[in-house]
Image 1 (tube, rainbow, N blue to C red):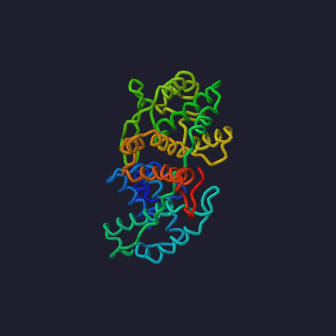
Image 2 (cartoon, rainbow, N blue to C red; image 1 turned 30 degrees about the vertical axis):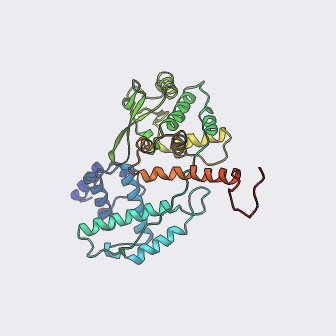
Image 3 (cartoon, rainbow, N blue to C red; image 1 turned 90 degrees about the horizontal axis):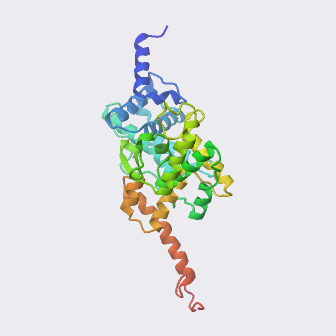
Length: 339
């Protein structure tokens, strides 16, 4: 028979952190797993971290301690972290990516550093194990985006002669028009739509909320979905969620599959995800003359530096056109370009 105190602790942990049920790893009330659980609880309660953030931290930390066979906090040394860093660098990435992206490695190492800070603050380790000059890998690849012609083809791919087609077309239109994250899309209730102002309240990372505008075309598509499509899905009257499927609210995985489905149908050969539409939204606004600060606010980025990376595309495209068209463009070889 299970100890009632341990059972009570487990029930409390489940109440405090409900999404743990979906984790692959069983909650263990001892050792490193218990410390990770307490760390995650502190992020939720004291810092108000989002469920997506804490879920990712939990997965990354559990994978780290199991991959490196860490049984005690003091076993997390600089050598162990560097060895894990090397291990990640040699792992295959998702899909067609030959290796894990530097940004992904940085996120995993950032989780370890944050966990170590908590261990030090809680006196589970006596001294900071990493060198002060320890730096996370940085990589700023150009954001992947689609030209507007391909975005238009993608959005028009669903046939609006069925409830599912009406929903899918409205969803693709809404993703591109607002540039919101897929996690923000899936967690959005109907009450966050404000048709009088053609805008939506979006609850983003770190519990921050923002108002995101959209145009009359998007408004018409979403209204058509609400009137003709959404009521046909099961439990539509009792569910607050905006986007529904046959088994309830749409999940992030379902939205990814939906985008992939219509990408293939549109004949687009490059990989496209919901995040590609977010990047396309930002890129097309900047190309249209939008201010960086406005784009930052619409996308919900905490730092304008993230938006600055989008401008690199314009600079490189300008360089390509300049080199091809200007008489003194490109690598000058001593002869004038023919005009």
